[in-house]
Amino acid sequence: MFLESAAVLAFHSDSHAPTLPPGHRFPMSKYQLLREAVQAQMPGIRLLAAPAASEGELALAHDPAWIEAVLGGTTTPAQQREIGFPWSQRMAERSRHSVGATIAAARSALLGGEGLAANLGGGTHHAYAHKGSGYCVFNDVAVAARLMQAEWHRHRRELLRVIVIDLDVHQGNGTAAIFRDDPTVYTLSLHGARNFPFRKEAGDLDVELPDGCGDAEYLAALDRALARAWEDHRSAAPALAFYLAGADPHEDDRLGRLKLTREGLAERDRRVFAALAERRIPAVLTMAGGYGREIATTVAIQRRTLEIAHTAWCAWAPMQNHRQPNENHR
Image 1: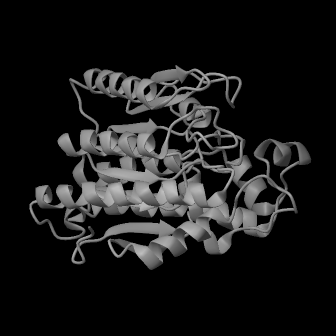
Image 2: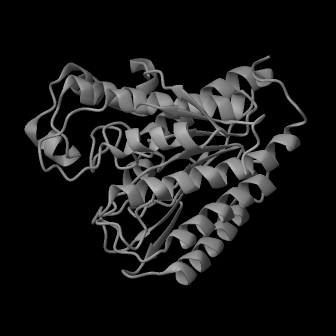
């Protein structure tokens, strides 16, 4: 049951969605469908239109030449094939606003004292510093993490340690590559061993799962991974988490190859949010992948994730000592 007086902020960017060629396999409409479901059925979620990330913000995690190619429309056919989208002005704008949504959510969760905020898209973890890949143009989590570290240091004069909990069914290879030599950002990924990307990048903690992995095996692996992550942070805890809650480990996902049920995914989400709440780590939720044979299945899974996030936030909010918004900016 939602508390009408409390709301999780969720940022959306689907109004900038490009028109894809007929028969394209990426379910672009899922973002609009999720926003409409939230708007109609979830009073505990407050929807806000995402701003566009600036070129300077994108440059915190991306090479200037790649930013210029995307925004200026000079990506090559080979680069577009690797991304999986043809270039268009709307594709570029959607990519900027998707990053902007994660930035806005991170500012709200961390600097605004909300504790938790969401991007109704995002989780574009296959994008490298110098290129896009796998339906990912810019890496929203990498940009937002780097920006929050800069803003946190400016306001607090402290180092911000970040943890990325990536539970999309595909390994976050771009994120791992961007933060490979950065000890301030810890990347944890549970993913299909035989799924895309076929050449994995080494993160801080990678857990490979066999095809057909079901609820019990998955949740046991998650528990072990989280325990290892907290042990790795015993001397310096993270102060911000990004959670990529992919719907694609679901048993009916076209690209997933795992066999989690809806209840298994819901329990996954509960365990992640419980672990973060226990440690009072502000969190940014991104929806990441989801390619259900029926698009309604993907939307329903993501909607459930948001419900669980709201429940966690209602438990989190009293622990914030009733801080006023933007208190951390002072």
